[in-house]
Length: 132
Length: 135
Image (cartoon, rainbow over the protein chains, first blue to last red):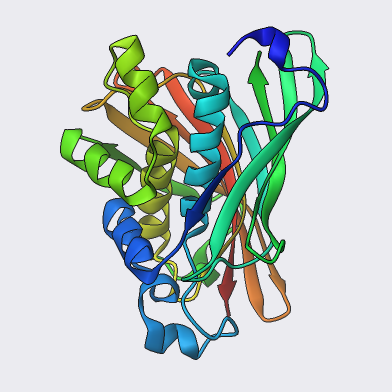
């Protein structure tokens, strides 16, 4: 990906993933995070969420895949991320990761990034800084 | 070591933890998150890189185990800086400390700063997370 591509306003290549309880369970096994809010439907039903929700770090993995595809090694070496979790992703949701170059400061680009569900609700929002 | 949230004071240093992400663990992670970009990049560069969020997730797991967060704890925000790519099989040691603790609407709000380093004590990642814990 050439540096010249990353001008202010340029969109990062978005990606979409469909969540399922099976995928959330698989992530729990891969990460070791078995918090019952993610993997125990009976427990999760008693919480304010009313059901299981995906791990926040699973959504960040989707953002990271997008950023790896966009920036390559520069994301892995020197990439910075600052996000807030704003909504819960649930089994059945289609999560879209997307981003846009907001500013270019010297050799570094500052991008807004977010994950949305199929209703356009923001699940994760924040900023990423990476060497261009 | 188990610690109740009430006993965790601001500035509290968590015990250092270390982990290794081997080839099997990385494959399991990549399958779980369906990441196609990292294997493509690693192959192009001839490296056995670990996905950066796999390193971060493992670091967070070791922290939350150390803090013994109760069921229902929620991840509120996350900051991360990846200093360099981690390779499969590298041992990473994490140090962390509690930088904030407050009560808000029946929830504990905790902020934890963390640093991960390689076996030469060189930094590989740093971060800050906030977590909300039902009181």
